Length: 89
Image (cartoon, rainbow, N blue to C red; front, top):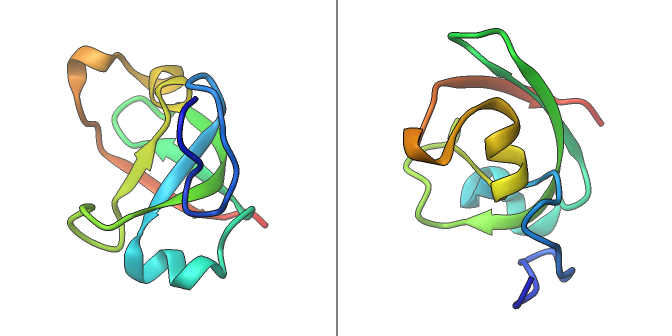
């Protein structure tokens, strides 16, 4: 809830938002778009809004979630989980 993300807005930790890898972030062209995320091992789904860029994400398929988004499909203790995703808007 401190600094604004690369898209320019401040969001709370419980906001359903994400950051995309730099190439997919596309210089902000995808700000505000929603993505549908599926956790591959459980089938759980969520919709999140692109609010930031993730220059440290390792590849174009990686997504960095807010705490609220991440914990809607897993626990912080897991650290990472496998997903598939696509742009919903």
